[in-house]
Length: 105
Image 1 (cartoon, rainbow, N blue to C red):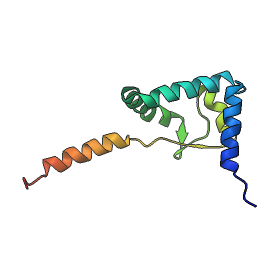
Image 2: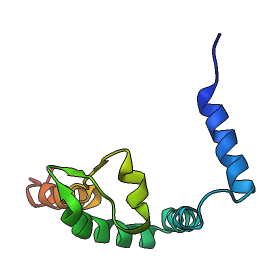
Image 3: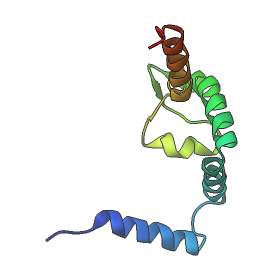
Image 4: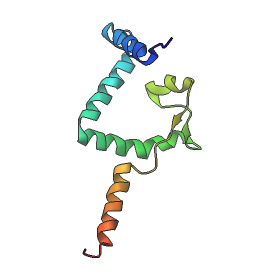
């Protein structure tokens, strides 16, 4: 017998959202996250802020306690610290170095 657990969890989450059963802070965070993901400018800004501030809370590559309202999430799990540099910065720097070394072909 195969139980569709992921689909059941998604439906439960939708039901909780429709009934506004989740904590107010959690709803606010999801709303802000949704807006940030829809805006390239906001996404760039937030990832820049995250890579510069979140490492302060990390030890040995893991964040044992997230700051503020996210603290409860880390009561039962660790969160990986962000990379010191964003992928988009690594990509941009790699492309600029590649064009510097381009032999004109």
